[in-house]
Image (cartoon, rainbow, N blue to C red):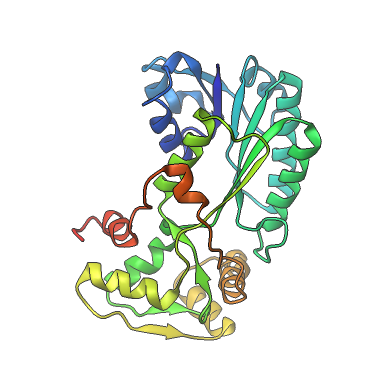
Length: 287
């Protein structure tokens, strides 16, 4: 059985590949990457490294050839570009005769108010319409997404947010990646939808966790969206990105990431990594 994944040299995909190699023979693992030279370390282990570029659909036909199971890691970019790229990947999977697609989606993709939800809703629909068996991994939010705020707090700034009492199901990227590997290499996941979420917590509650790791009390500064945007702009966030960062805060405030589910633990067959441990790893300090 050939298992393939896209984005294997990225932060997420590299962990998936590392995890799969613990239970899958390297010769049965295929990685589709835009820049094969960045995957030489995997080739050295016996992994089949192939050139695959979502912007060059013809390369995907070769990249997915002979593949039984495929992980499509959602691409980066604006929504329209991502939708086009994901459609190209799904179409190539159909042409290659792939039997099972695992896709990294987002929590409650079909109804979420997150700015990026339309990408995942559309991609899930593409996959359903393809007729290929699937598993949608509706990832909530990576703890790593908060690294900027966490580092600012470490440097003495308050925890800044306009998300109010909105909750987020934070978990580490590694936990999400290991769940993906479990589905790819496991059985019984045909046509499944998994809501992968840590225990929902507010910004203030995460700030307490960060304070515990740093050994200090963290002040939480709740502001409105306009003030948040102004402070972010002064901190160097590009003007074009401001609607996105503010939109995330608004969506959290509206409950878009307040998702309670036991799917994560079921897939991992272990407890999630404690947030304190995740924060410690991000900062390189002991919990």
